[in-house]
Image 1 (cartoon, helix red, strand yellow):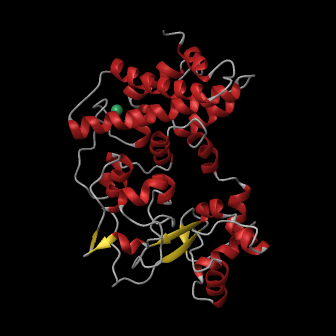
Image 2 (image 1 turned 120 degrees about the horizontal axis):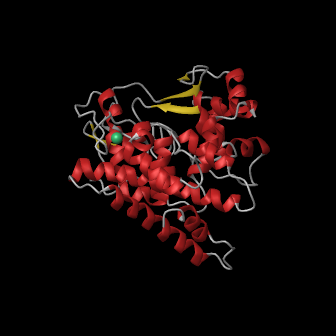
Length: 347
Ligand SMILES: [Zn+2]
């Protein structure tokens, strides 16, 4: 595995070599690595490279200079990760940026050139882009970096660090399954994924980027806003976790890692379904808290705690009802029945 990853590193890092040019022109038919799918027509070596796209995201980053090489949708060049994973197949249409575009194609006259935002994902991307230097032809080229010992990224490959990280099983893999799963709601997965990465633009982060905003949490008004406060330590959030997870856990989770542990701890014959309900609850609570926070900041609208419980409950019922319609025959107990079981001490 380490050797295969090293081959990928060389592919990205030594981009001008004859081997790389030969691969792109002859094997990938001029297309980028990211846009080439695994196929039996390739040699074992090429297939082993294409099959590691997912793992590569843990190790490879692109530092954008002039933006002429990094692919807008596929390279890991913003802190949101590869953008095609977030925006899905409708991304190129909604942002009016072709699937094969480089980052420089999202720039015009020295500014990011994106259409007015129509979704939370697009809004988050624009906030993050506003903190990044705009690529320019005056800059040097884009540079690929590999994960280094300190957890950052640098211009060299270390077999030891790479091996150790694979062996230790990066913690991001644990929560990956908590965020992306069959019963997910994509817009909620996106917000919780960004929260797990620590990359939602909460007020503490906006301030660290030099933006002039109030530091306080708009849900409780007693502490400063950060990801861990907003989603767990805030009294508004803790009451929500208690209301919906009280049956599973004596005290509400205090961090995203605690949610992952809770999912792993559930045992018994119905564990897989119960975990699915819990994962859905997790992403709906996080998503709804983020929306409530945004509504208070941007629209001056706020829900009471009780009204907020109803928002979470409605989202859970809608999703679980739509799932029970698509599963034939519905297994017993259904996810909806399990959810009611979660709630029964209160309803
Ligand atoms: Zn708060």
